[in-house]
Image 1 (cartoon, rainbow, N blue to C red):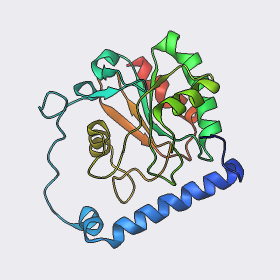
Image 2: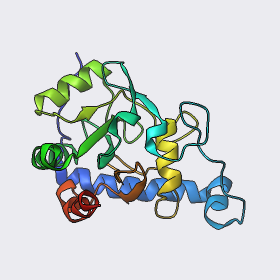
Image 3: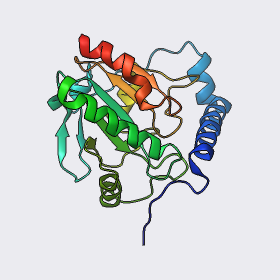
Length: 217
């Protein structure tokens, strides 16, 4: 029987593992020819990511993603909202703190300011999201999640969801653009443009000041 829970060693160990995981991903990428090229070559910029209509994407509204129950969701429905888009995992040391603070931000800003949080489960980091979509949904409901949960995806590699390819292209990371660990957060303005990227060591409530700026636009 599948079970969820916080990491055995707790959030502090999870944070350490997260930092080590981030470092190892960067080292592995830099150790490969492709990684070196990504950081130091003068190769032309990659081609624009194409949206669901096959045209080069200009905003997150050009994509469709499956909700956690399998229903296709056109991200155009979020037009005019400030967004946080994040890759989540159920067994990460950051899970309890991030879910609690995402709930806090959602309760504070969803109705009053129009904040929307789009959470994408991913199992690419430490195997910390191994369950089915149904199990992940049950886990999130057990934490009183009211924000939008999507079906499990890849955020790196050839099978990465096009939305995440686009996010990485528009908001690159340190050393390399690849997502390095669970709970990487992208801020998106009311025009659907990614304007910020934050790693797992930045807690959701630390985004308040940036969110307030985006709400005021």
